[in-house]
Length: 213
Image (cartoon, rainbow, N blue to C red; front, side, top):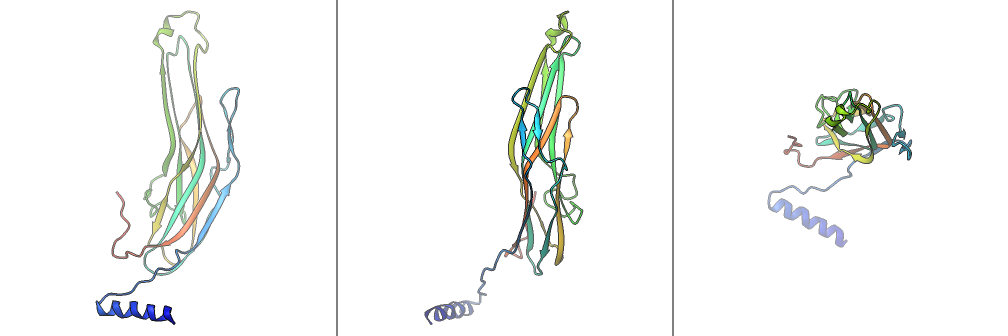
């Protein structure tokens, strides 16, 4: 009885001051997929092992409700690995390695409405540029093989929030995939384990659209 009287008081005060009483509602649904294969670094030479070989995770299907302000927050989270091996000798005194991983989120097969992609090929999750120069090696007649080697391997956890709004009510399919940026001799990448999470949320500020720069 006291609770009813309290709610009645709120409605009365709102009406008195010409405002509308707004009550929060559930944020919606949650869906996810994952790949459990792990990356590793070999102790003897730093080479990367393991990882997800398909360059993608299973798609996630979400049923979007009707109403203004509905959006999807899409979060691909992965362990990523980069490997570079720069070698020098008397005939090659400069070595450049450039390798990275780019993640692409698509909704219904397109990145056009996915922020911040907006039609692009994806977002860089990890990238390394390595340049090694040793001009003095050119004067060493005995330096004909791999006289100078620099190996780097790293593993790290990466996560990034994508989002899409103004979707039509109904079922939508969200996918995440990745490709190699740069690459070439003496480089390598690894991805895994990883998760793709999708949460349906509600923007209550209908007159204040989501902003991006």
